[in-house]
Structure formats: C-alpha cells, structure tokens
Length: 274
Ligand code: KIV
Image (cartoon, rainbow, N blue to C red):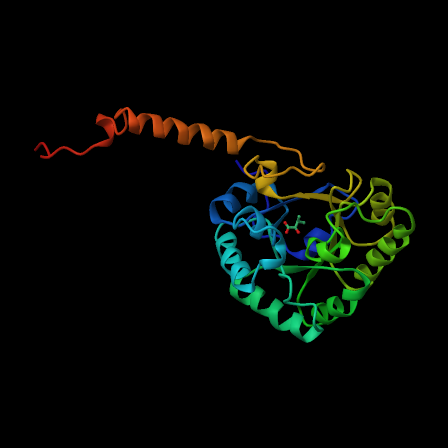
C-alpha cells in the first residue's frame, strides 16, 4: 500500500512547495530493490555518493566516480515512480568551473533520468549553482559538514558552532539566492538549523540538524541497520537488517553442512509423472 497517492513522479517544484508544511521525507538509495522499497514512502530519493562507503567499502566519498554514480543512478531510476530522484555530483566533477559542473551534471541527468543534482558547498559554489539552474539543471545544495571536504574540514565535525555560525548562515543565503531548490544541512547545531530554516525561502533537509528542518534525510543502509561499521550520533536505526542477514546466512550454512538443505521441496524428479 502506497504512503503517497500521487500519480506522477515529484519534481523540484513539489519539494519547494513543501517549505514550512508537512516534513519532506528523504532517504538515499543505490539499487533498484531498495529504490522500490523507499519510493512509496519518500518525497525525495537521493542517489548519494555515500554509495562509495556503504556499498563499495571505500574509506570516504572521495573515490566515487561519475561512472559509479551513473550506474547506481540508472538502477535507482528503475525503482522509482513517486519520489523525486536527486543524484550527487561526485568529488572532482564540478569544483573546477561552472562549465565543468554543467558538462557532468548534464551527463548525470541525461544518462540516469534524475530530476536534479546535489553538490556540496556554500558561498564558493553559488556561481556554479546559478550557472546550472540558468541552464535547466535543478540543484540541491549541501552545506555544513560536506564529506567531500573532510580533509580541509579536519574530520567529520559539527559545523557552525561559535564564530563559524555566521559562515553557515552566509552559505545558506548564498545557495538560496543562487537558485538552489533546497539545501541539505549536515551536522549543524539544532538552533542554527532552525534559524536558517526560518530565514531562507527554500526547504532545508537536515541530517544531524534537528527536527525543525523542513525535511529529514538519512543514509538508507544506516537506518535499516545494514551498514554497521560505525554509527554517527544523528543516525537512528529503524531496523536491524544486518543482524537478520547474519542470522539467515548462519542458518543456511548450518543446513548445508547438515545436508538438510536442499529439502525434498527444492529438488527435481528424474522423471516427470504423466
Ligand atoms: O551522500 C549522501 O548520502 C548524502 C546524504 C548524507 C545527505 O549526501
């Protein structure tokens, strides 16, 4: 049973229209089966570059390539009917110039059918966001903790505390003024996220930014309990699928070793009865 009665796939304008209303529900997805599970319940599905860490075992998102994003984007698109699909621009695919960003965003949109791209960065990415939006590419911005900048940020730290608060507010204003249709606030103190949400006209989608944002996003493998290498404070595990999978594989191994699987119902007779 679908949680949404919409008959067409959502567009960026539908997300903008949710500003200040019912919270925007967003999860990541990287594969067709998971896209099918999350689609009826989500307004927005993000093909995040977190795919590098949760599915490919990379130590950070820095090694994610355009080819990986295209492949996972195509897989997710096959599973969506309702939610807006947003695809991450990987590290190195957009920072050099607005022209580089356009060329790669166009590939991501054309080859996957995504309705928008997401890129990391505040004031310094405003020119690029405006360039993309003016050329028909809806952009979701991402400020606060921007994992692609983990090396210059000095780790996965909370952003916007103390003197850094003004920078975050300026980042939020800059991406909104540049034409982003929404902005992810990652690992930002709750009071600051509330202030930004009240000040800017576009929806804020929080991850580690409190319940006052216009919406929430989590990495799907985190909330399902499939990715268990580490658990950031902002993650709530709504399921324990990793444990369930471990139990299932353990049961399978035991039955194979005991020759109790396959059973009579799983085998084929030598002759078919007429
Ligand atoms: O890559 C990702 O999954 C993200 C979300 C955590 C917002 O950027």
